Image (cartoon, rainbow, N blue to C red; front, side, top):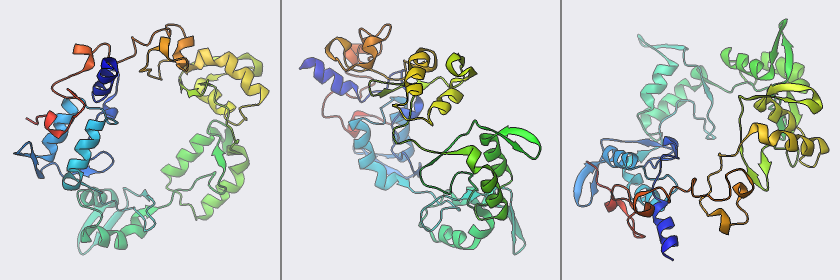
Length: 327
């Protein structure tokens, strides 16, 4: 039971194995009023200092301690930013950042106006009025080659000819963004009619994933170049993964491809195992080199005192906001 308690308490801490994106933030997914004063352990501080303390002491985003901080301070510290191109049906339209607005002797680009509005809440009158008055000039729905049907995927790496030049469907999509081609325009409809058959395909019900094994999906090493002799293909693993994604997982070509490419294209370190492999038969790393024990991957085993404490956080099962001291 002591081992279980150690694992539970240490789960609040982020070790060096985790990226900054996985560190707790009070206002994760929304904006913060950093100067807003709040009470912490009977002391007045600011939302920014509370958030800074979480970052410095590296509390995990998905931990119970993080959830406690968020529920305690979110209503005081956080707000949904005003976004000029947020439509009435809550969809984000694309911004024309360089479009120049001129009104009453004042001029500014849509990008500048959007930046000014972003420090306001989406419910502020200034935000609501700006959206009503400026959306038509500043915002548009980006043309997408494969948007006409619901179960359609993009074949980004397919080669196509456009205006005499050879490019990929991804390059064609980039061109549409650079030119800010809107979805309902004649140019968009013409592009869709010309390239839909080359750039789009029906998504399989059970898509082939070359880096899936025993129900675990590993990351594709996208930039690595390999040769798949069965199809006489030399390309990056990202391109090859996209090629197989058009197939059903039960397709014989998919099965053969996974057997050949799994060891070449898949990052076996992309799944962090927290349970000891010797006691967990479902551990996907148990059958990989170095996978017989998860002690090297378990952040608990390398933490001082068995991972029970780091900077005063996570010292017990009753972790709460008072376990962190903003300086």
